[in-house]
Amino acid sequence: MKLRYSQSSPFVRKVLMVAHEVGLADRIELSPIDVWSPDSAIVRENPLSKIPTLLTDDGMVLFDSPVIAEYLDSLHAGRKLIPATGPVRWMVLRQQALGDGICDAAVLRRLEGLRPAALRSAEWDSRQRAAIFRAFDRLEVEAGDLPEPDSPTVGGLAILSAMGYMDFRFAHEPWRTGRPGLAHWFESASKRQSFLATLPPTE
Image (cartoon, rainbow, N blue to C red; front, side, top):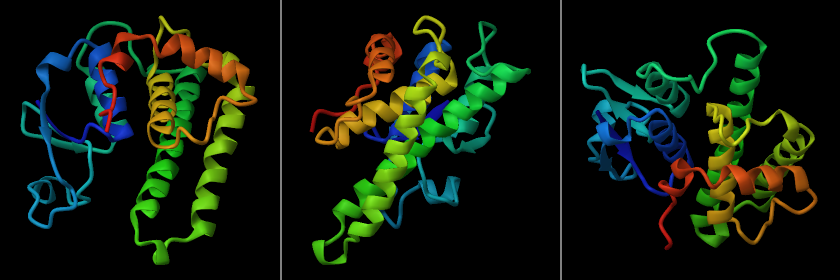
């Protein structure tokens, strides 16, 4: 398998954490790609020109991190990161949606911050920031429903990736303040090898 990726993408990180958790990381060739280049090879594989994009061994091209995560989870015989049925399945998928939604808003803020100063919208940034911190508030209320660190789920990994991205790009906006339950969960869950093996670049 080949993964079109960027080391700084939180969606790529989630997928790579899934790969580590299900024992498939060694089967994935990492292929860095510049999605902003007009002649990037990714446009021939993924019409959305987004990462992560996975090229499977049987010739499929999969994109969007929830799809790739579910595909990788289907390839192993161990405990699944995405439960097949029941209320716990929907809780896990909902947690994934919250984690991915935080990342969506944070990446939008990051891109807005890279625009020329005269073109940036403070209102747009404020709207995305508010969504991020509302999501963290909800996760604090529901911290007791987050997976135990030794029993990871795709929802927990998505939330871990979101927290890691906030520390990476927005460390000046501490999400832990006023959220002790969430901070405690992160402190424990972030010790997993899958999290440590997928740290973003230091610069």
